Image (tube, rainbow, N blue to C red; front, side):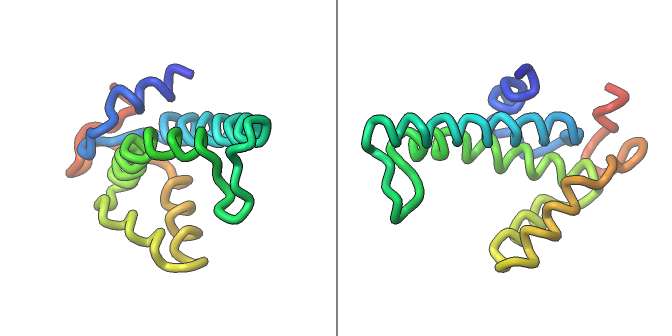
Length: 121
């Protein structure tokens, strides 16, 4: 849970590096929250099956969009890649798979152009 709040505190930080733990705990909590909010939207009757999202889910998605982009860019920096690689998400099928591989890779050892290794901080 602390990793989730750490990302929210750095909601508009697009520089530096984020370790795998920070990125994946944030994503895990987002998945859990999204499922819970979809259930809540279903109970409240605000879930729209055509769009696949309800009112609560939409508000949450908008609220965590900027922190999610920030932590993903910092995660790419940790593997010594520029944040522009995030645009791979726009390529159907193959783009998200490549981005997933980049986020799973181990940190670039030592200091790189984006800062010191966050594991040693």
